Length: 317
Image 1 (cartoon, rainbow, N blue to C red):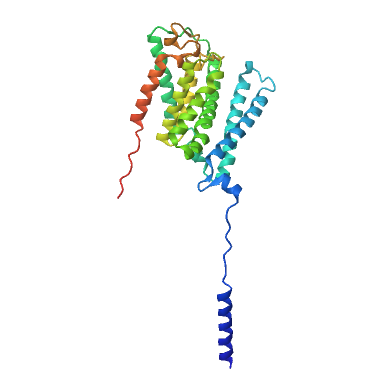
Image 2 (image 1 turned 90 degrees about the vertical axis):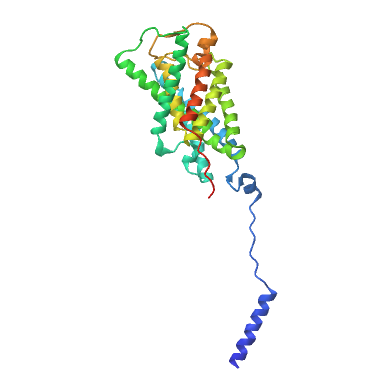
């Protein structure tokens, strides 16, 4: 009887299961999630838009705070503080987005473990030698006159160090803003070189606000921006570009004491002057508007391509 009863219950349970099958609840992502996120995380367009808006808001605040009071030295310390604030304004939104997208910080081109390391110093040497070649070419054309040394002793060391730190901040800020998160994110959507070209054009145009800037200088800035993208592509890091950028600006502004993107700064080393036709000296732009600057950058581009060749694709086994 017990066996018969158990058999009857088992048959009843099987019948119930066959008439009431178990369903797994399907959970489709919400429309909002699909709108903002794709298979590869936050969609590139939204990420770039959020980054730009957040940067502009933070940069406006940074500029106001930097100049809210006179820090002395004819505004030089306020300029330093402004650049530091600009760097924070470029980094903070990227840190937030890195958490949202669950990506390591190094994905955006500035891995902390490589900070001020080998690539940075190689870039610094390339940058200083490049601006030196431009100045030498202008000098050979009788357009550059060094004058005499204006700084001595502790003042020389003080301003050399000040401008070194200042242009390090400039390099970090500008190269990360245009070739860090922005480059990485746009490249996900439209490809590396289309993104590089677009951002290089913007990089050139933002120099339009500099006093004494001309279209030749804007074009050169865009060209250098593309070159920095090449260094990013070949080295896998922005540290080479940061070193190049900082050393170029330091050499142009402090060491050779000539206009940098149309601006002549205080506390430079020499009483140098540029004389001659605009095609030779760059006019109000400075060496960056000279024909020789374009030629030198082209040669440096070729040299870099030889020293840092493209990796050959691995053959399938």
